[in-house]
Length: 117
Image 1 (cartoon, rainbow, N blue to C red):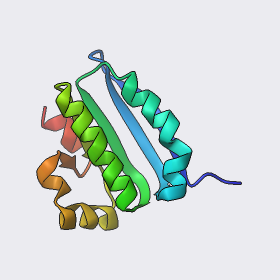
Image 2: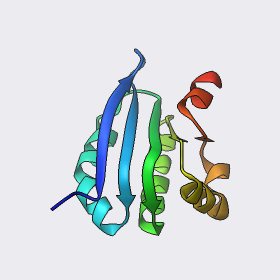
Image 3: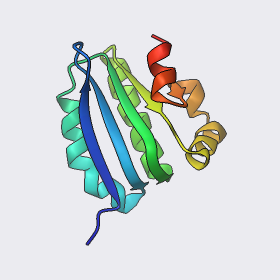
């Protein structure tokens, strides 16, 4: 059976920041597939900025958004931050509608994120 959601994890620079690329659909089934893997990434994260590249994320439901909010709250408590990059038009519209962009940084591209530093 094909997975609905695939993660790719990369280190960003020397500061321990991490890039997590999402490919697929972040719904109940997708969340179940990546929950343990993403939990390990978050629990072992030693940097300041955790970047979620959503360029290949086709869909996100309320469960996925709630999980992002939970990760954001966890990181902020530890003086860290979650940054979202590259949401497609549908995902960006959902983020705008529920106010995600007022809660955490969202950038259109990785270049936009890198250039803001």
